[in-house]
Length: 341
Image 1 (cartoon, helix red, strand yellow):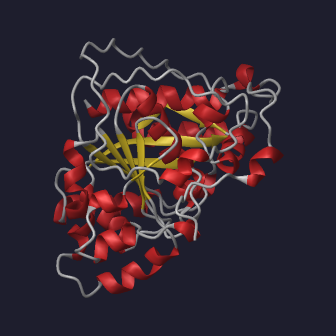
Image 2: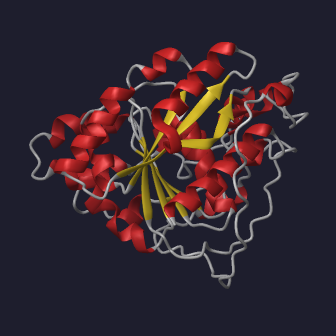
């Protein structure tokens, strides 16, 4: 077994970003006109060295390997200035409907926050392990995962955290082993509190902890909601995606009442918007009417660049840094920092 879980992605060459700018004709002209996000205030705190106390060093053999990142995917400048204060905010990215952009949002929001100088930990809490794969990890090479962290008291957070290729962005990986967790957790004492206990050491090290939840409202999702201070709900701009919102909001309300009074909905994020369709605009308008200020001003438009970045194993901010999708997640990161402060 290869000791380095971050493997060269042989499919990356299938999608060379020869033109990182969006190629959808007329997209800018038909983009939904929403209020602009206020610019980020200048950071005044002095620089600090990244805290790597919870991060496992990459194996020596891996230092000789280089992952093929497309030529146009040069990382943006990283100022390494920490946000105005160490927030230690845990955010659960939740929606019981699959395919709405939870994993895409977790990866790219995390990368955008790290670009702003924050220390970010991503927690892959989905047995499908899409978050880990999207950051270039091979699920078959993961020896210690979030499953072991939850159920083996000899495993501590530093044993599980791996550094990613993105400066300031670390990962707690997952694989199919996590699918057995819900069955095992049934007999555990205070089973809804396990993830909160496991993540407590990270609160003093990371500014933001983003938990990518599975597409269900089961015990894993309840664990994530119990550990979090805030919820981000990615919502596909499509009518059927609206139907499950009532059940999701009811679950959040029950967790607030019974398990985690500090939990609040930070915002609802409209994703996968087809700007050229009337249907997408109508759904976005209804969400705005129903949830008001809870709807993020930033809207994530549908683009193939997100899928191509996942194939390459890097966020869109690295794969296509000048694309519309990259800029939208930068705008979202500023909104999240404003709402979390």
